Image 1 (cartoon, rainbow, N blue to C red):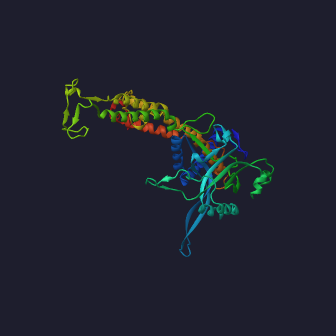
Image 2: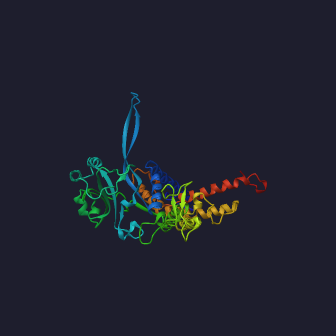
Image 3: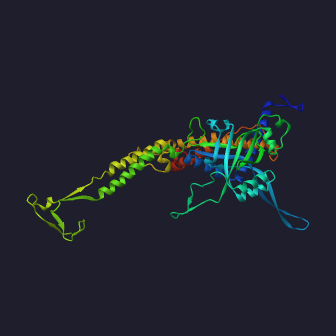
Length: 456
């Protein structure tokens, strides 16, 4: 028996079961709250984008949670008059979004984890219209924004050097003038924050450094706030396609297969050049022995030639010779196949994942249930590794910050709050579920055989 706080006794197993049930309900409630924020902010689309960024550029970057003013509509009907009125509600909600890796600047001394660095800087772009909208908000320095508008954009600006073409040769489309805005996440001294009109508590005044977020425009601070996360973490996560030692950036598919790509380009170029050379013949004529009747030295059909015998040349067959350039298409095609196979090996993404199992010279899997199952498991191994890396680098860390946000937010019900841990199951379970579905499609034909005793 266990003595409870009110003095009564209960069986230990009942107390443990009640505690586990309460903890489970609390964890499920917090999970539903995070899920709601992901759906409201369309976060899943941004997560898919960072996977694409990681495959192309080597690293995907996601930012969150950060507060956004989300508008919602509420229709209210007055029972007395029957009139229905629309009410616009504005509420600060946490969300996440994808960041272009080329606009992310972590502390160079951070090593493999950006959270080990002293600061993190994000670059963003705003037009003059967007800055004027910010000047209307209370927490922005209106004078600094107006001074920046009078100066005009400083720095490179988006796409200033690399203009986008509009499809017509010689013409390009330039961006309207944009302002570079920088968001600094790192520690600031209390004096600096007080100079930017940030209200601090008595405890914060005695700290040497306070985690803050400072918005910079044209070398001016236009906004400064204490980091909304009480943990002081940077709201960023890096997803490297293939991690690289001592740096947060990874290697993407194009980088890994760069050598194979060079071989492939050279081999295809040589193949086309050889095809052009070997398609025609080289003709040699003894000077003075042959002359065309029409006076034009060109090869056409039904053409007449004049033969003029000499003391040393009496046979017309010896006056003209035809030479054919040998075709080496088969040898060059073998090099192309080698480059494609090399790309598979270097990227760890075999063509089997793209639905192909018939490449020339490769070992083919037996067309049996067991053989195909083993082949699919081997082919999915790289995807399972990437899915697990996505859980480790993004899901666990990202959801932990959402959990911290929910714990400090008054909008989250108290029954959802508890000492929870993040356990990522989504990416890996989806891979397993997909593999299971493929197996079921193959195994369904065995159901009709009574010897297997398989229940449909």
